[in-house]
Amino acid sequence: MITLGKKTSTVLSVVALVAIAGQALAFRYEFKAPYTCQIPTVGPLEGSTTGYTTLTPSTVKAGTPTAIALAVKAPIDSPEDVKSWTASIDIDVTGPENVTVKTEAKGGAFPGGDLISMQLNGTWTPTKPGTYELRPGKATVTGDLQVYGQVTVNCTPDDPGTPFKVVTVG
Image 1 (tube, rainbow, N blue to C red):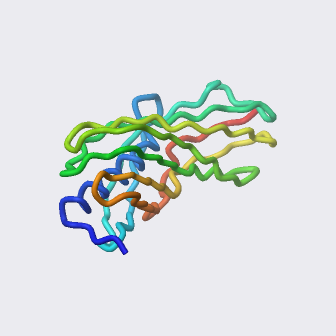
Image 2 (tube, rainbow, N blue to C red):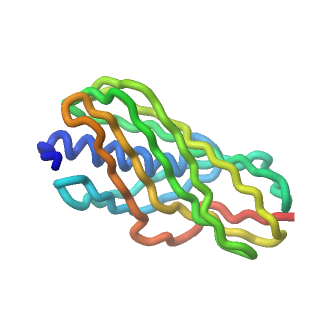
């Protein structure tokens, strides 16, 4: 069992929320979503994220792969260095067909207190035309911390709420 101090749990919480924010980021479509993250041996942490996403191509057609990019930057208030990390954020797609698209990213070392930035990428290939709604789904961040080793934080949206993007597939 891993025992985490208050500063480390804060850092892991921020890392988790950074990944969540990854559902958004520096692109075209903005969204806001409340999340609850489960921090190992610490418990739940609630927070909201704001972000942006991009679909490529912008005109989506049935049977054609569509790239989904999510990007994020956030300060990490960590007393510890992170040796490496991985993140994934699901995008729940509802409409003529319901699917979950996984976006993923990984990165190398960064010192405590520095900014972490990530771009998560995934691909969605709709098979039916119609109107789809995209919402943030679960997020997972795993960090290899200098002192504590590998720690995984899982986050779920509190309320999927308003879609961050409505897409008409031709």
